Amino acid sequence: MQKIDKDYTKILTTNYKKWVDALEATGKKHPLSKTYYDGIVMDLYRCQKGVCAYTERFLCPPSLYEARHWTNEGVYQIEDPEEFTRTDHAGELEHFDPTLKENQYWLWDNLFMIDARVNSLKSNKSVVAYLKPDSLDYTTEQWLDYDEQTHRFVPNTELDEEKAKEVQYMIDHVFYLNHGVIRIDRQEYVEKIKMKKTFLQPYKIDRYFTAIKVCLEDFSL
Image (tube, rainbow, N blue to C red):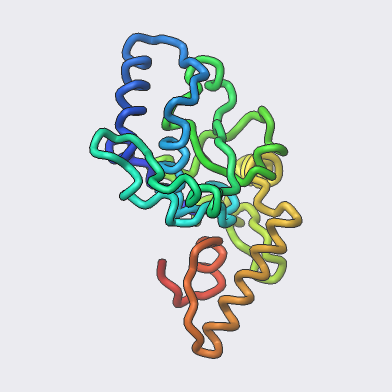
C-alpha cells in the first residue's frame, strides 16, 4: 500500500476547497450535495496515480485526471462528455474513518478513491489511524511486508504482537489487500512485468507499485 501525497493546499478543485473550508470554519454539518463530486474524485485519483488507495489496483485512466480538465476557477470539466463515458473509472468514494461521515462527509483528509469491490466489503468497520496511507509519518516498510511466493501482504515481522494483530486486522477487514481476485490480478501483473524485464521488453508500471518495488529489486518508482 503506497504512501499517498494528498497535500490539501495543492488540490485543483479549489471551488470545493472554498466551500468546505467555509463549512469547517463555521462548524456546519456537511450537506450531502454532490455539486463538487467529479472534481473531488478526479483530484483524489490524481493524488493516487489512478489506483485504489489501498490495493493499488488500476481504477482510472490518466486522461480523466489530467490538469487540463480544471478551469482557472478550480472547476472540473470534461470538454467531450463522451470521453468520460469511454474511459469511465472503476472506483468509489471512501471515507476512511466512517465515524466522520455524518458531520464531515466531504472532509478532504478523510477521503480516498478505492476499488468498488473493497468498498462494498469494508462497510463501517473501525480503523487503525496510523495505517492511513496519506499520514505524514506513514511508510509502507514500517508496517507491511510483501511475500513474493504467495503474493500476499503481511504485517512487518519486526512488529510486536499487538501491532501485528492491528495491522493484520486492517489487511483483512479494511484494506482487503489479499482479497482473492485482487491478489490474483496483482500476481499476474507482477509476473508479466518481471517477464518483460527479463526479456528486455519495454514496460510501464501503472499499478501495484508496492509489490513491483519489492519483486523488482532494482526498480525505482
